[in-house]
Image (tube, rainbow, N blue to C red; front, top):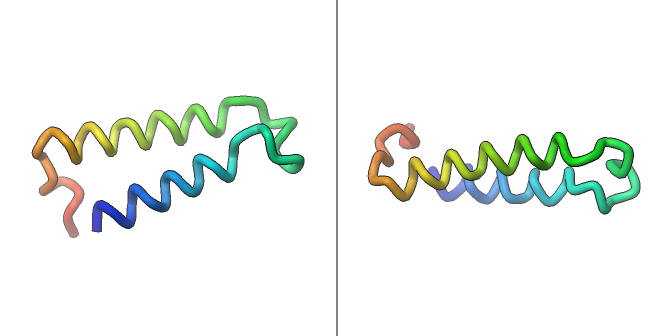
Length: 55
């Protein structure tokens, strides 16, 4: 399950990068927020507290 969450977050992060035409006016706020969320999930997953990510 955590792998699915990581893949979805990475795909969302790529989708909101400001290089795409539809998101060029958004700036870096959406990608920065998703990047921070991805970083938090990675830290939790790598710290050994995987129980928090299991369903």
